[in-house]
View (cartoon, rainbow over the protein chains, first blue to last red):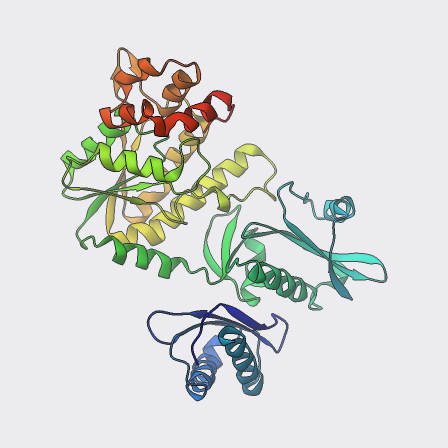
Length: 87
Length: 338
């Protein structure tokens, strides 16, 4: 899928994640801020990257503001944002 | 609890009184959190600045702030505002960091945080890469040039003689009587012969009035000091570092209170980032210390011909060209100091 416009999904509320997706010139890129960055930063990035790969996205800048979301939530939010950014 | 947009600003104003805040005139959107018909929290946005944020003490730590912030970000996002900024007191830093905002810089009175796509490090890195400049040590000037005078020219020339490489950042914020593209063009043309000088746009993190922290600092002088110090720190930490700037030249300021305060903030702060600040005495012509405001004043009085001796020929030729007509009309009608 090709990102054609900025899109967002999620909330800044506790146990959720706010995902913003933008078209990117140099491949996929993730900018993550998280209240549990030290503990789970790499895991969150992996979930986001896996989701991008699954959807065959190759030009996304994903800005993620995490407030302790579980992997399933992260995956769902990323998928929604990507689909909104591609329609 | 529900979050709604409101136009009843006097009610919000009343609510904010308890927090020693007042709603600013320039807000575009104001949201309130309502429970049982009562306001329990609010926040507003003006352009890309989120401001006047408050939640009743009895509802704090219950997720009201995160709901307000989500809603206001969604609305800004839908309007195409992808970068947001928050000015707040240093003691609130952890609250906004917990909500995904990043600390940019700050002093004891005010801190700046950024969210969304905004990313100062990345932005400044891109600015540097796009400039194509080398990583050698440089001197730098930040100027508004409203318009470019012989005084500006003299300052840049001084820096050009005393340094191998010089960068001139022209303030990009479009709040001056001469529009940004004209100011930039006139500086570029006016220093074309100085081969070691590069003129470029100042971008979003150098003297941008969009990032003026005005709402929670009461006194004008405290506010001014906080603003100038914040700008100086951002310059030292991000711009000087990325561009390898070791010296910054400023013109001595005999007239303007704001510029004077800015100069003293630079003198105080930049050395701690390894940047030397050189204050250069102003160029005099016929006993007059040249300043852009002096030139604008002559224009305002219709004495365009008299500006000639204070301006490089490139600026003067622009002034008497038909392209300058609208700007001159605007200056004549305006009471703006800038």
